[in-house]
Structure formats: C-alpha cells, structure tokens
Image (cartoon, rainbow over all chains, first blue to last red; front, side, top):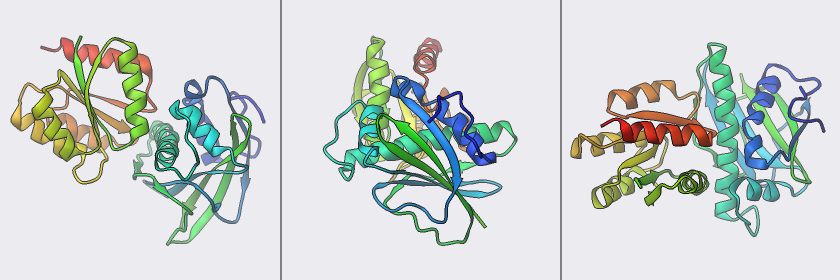
Length: 156
Length: 121
C-alpha cells in the first residue's frame, strides 16, 4: 500500500482519476487512507457493499466492497459512528454516501477533461450489470486496518 | 445564530453537514429525508437557510426548491450536489437557488457559502 500521493501501478485512465478522487476523502479518515494497485478483474465482487451508476460519454458502474471485513470499520470512521454490522441500514447508507463522495470527485475530475457525467443514487448488494461490461478494474485501498475494493466497470 | 434546515435522503450526509455547521455555531432547525418532508418542515420551521440535496426519492431537491420559492420568494436555498450534476445545478439556479455545494464537503467552503448566502439580503 502506498500513500495518497502514490499513483497506483498499472492504473489506466479510470484508475488514475479514481485515485485523485480518493485524495479528497482523506480529511474524513484522518490521514488513514492508503491505496494499492489497480488490477483488471473478471467480475464485480459479491457481499455487502454499495454500487452506483455514472452516465456520460461512457456508462460506468462503480462499486465499493470489502475484501476482509474492513468496510464496516471504514464506513464507521467515515460517518463518525459505530455501526453493529455492515448490513445495518445506517451502515449501508454510509457506504453508499462514501461511494457517492468518491464518484462525485471522480465525475468532477472527468468534467475538467470536458466530459460530463451524471451520478445515479447508490444501490446496495451485489452488482449485476444488465448490459455487457467492456472491462472491470479493481482499485485496492485501506481505510483503517483492512483491505477494501473500489471496483469500476465500463459498459459496452 | 442563523437556523438551518438540512434536506438530504442520506442520514450520513445529513450528519456530516450537521457537524460542520454546529461546530461553527449554526443552529440546525431540523432535518428532512426527502423533498416532501423538506417542504413541510420549511413551512413549519421557517429556517434562515435550507441546504437541499438534489437527488432524493419521492420528491427531488429541484421540485422542493420550486415549492419553497413559490411559497416564500425570500427563501434562501443552497443546493447540495454530487459533482457532475452541472445541468441540474444550472436548473436549480434558474429556479432561485442561492448557491450550491458539492460532495465531498469541504468544511471551509460550506461555512463560507452559508455566510455569503445569509449576507445576501
């Protein structure tokens, strides 16, 4: 894991922009946010988490899921509130808002490149895209002690 | 100190905004989770400023803004948007929104914007 100034190895256009988007979230984690590599993966993760659709010149699905039970810790830190479990409604709301913040910062970065994107409200559960996905990338990050994934897929 | 009504469907977002505002001496008049509730609470509470999320269930922030401004042409409403909702921001400004804030919230920008809107008599 690197620091927030680290540009993830193997990052493509989306990974680079997503990594910039994460920088804006650092104040919410008291400097406890760090990022790893961007990797190409075959599918969206299962398990508790939040998903969001971003539509513009391309349609992108973003998803935040836990890799090792870390999402609960991260959303608790983000919201400044202890949640009993990640399936708790308020914890999922915090996960959705965390994703909304990442996607919002992402869309802002894209708008600087002249590309306008509209964000749709976060949804919860496993992401199952109805349309075909061109590629799926997974950005590893830590917000506390455990590993989590920010996954983004570009639809065909 | 000025009173503020927060309208946002996300409890987390309301909490983050409430903490920033309260830490800087503002009073939270109330919190609403959608546009319908927001309009109802506005009429009851008459806050000095409303922070209004755009994307909400049942009644979105643009429609709620229109109702509030129709009922009170002096209402001061600050729209809350995720970045990338430029067209909706423009629409809100046309309908009488005073200003807008984007998520993720920057605490200094939140306070500056609320103070500027309060000063715009």
